[in-house]
Amino acid sequence: MIRVNLGTRKQASYVAGERGGGTKVSMNSLGDAVETFKELNLKKALLPLLVAGLAYSTVETYKNDELKKMDTQLNALREEKQKLSVQLAGFQKFIKIRKSLESDELLLRRKIEVIRTLLDGRGEAPKTLEALSNAIPKDVWIEQMEVKGNVIALKGMSVDFGFVSDFMRALKDHPAFESVSLKSTELRRVKGEQLATFNVEAVRK
Image 1 (cartoon, rainbow, N blue to C red):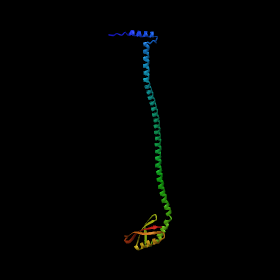
Image 2 (image 1 turned 30 degrees about the vertical axis):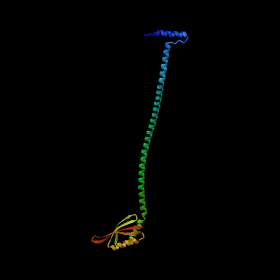
Image 3 (image 1 turned 60 degrees about the horizontal axis):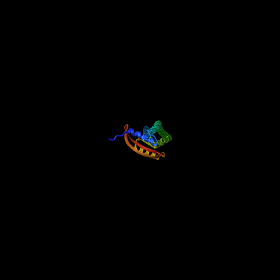
Image 4 (image 1 turned 135 degrees about the horizontal axis):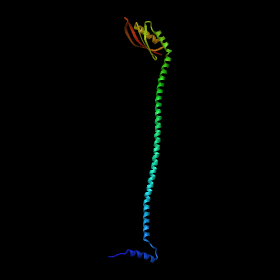
């Protein structure tokens, strides 16, 4: 069995150092150096973690700032949308009012046209009545007259169809009328007498 006396070796090494004129090396100093080396390695290991943490914090801060900006823009868009909705509602109300005014204007124009037509034809009515009174025979009488534009519908009676023919011929020859047509005729007994009824249509020039 081999025994090693560590105390003797330590002492011998220290003595050898002195004898050789070299630098004295203390075991305590060596331990301090090892601890310093460990601390340096620990700092080197922690540095990337610190950098990563700082980068993450910076990214989160930037993200939060961007989210705040986006929220602000979104709120602004919502306000703008609400304003546009109010304007659109007013515009739609304006469209309804405009359509109502256009409808009223169209109705008014039609009334004006009717009044204008009546005013334009006001001078024709006496001429038409005069033409009829000149063309109608003695034994023919008019029961009903209806005027639609230039068309005059006449319903009447006569003691004989010959007088009805004379009446139509007189209307055709009159310069106020363009054409005359017989729509219907019928024999009817009125108060014991047989009369000829007729329906004539005359077109004014």
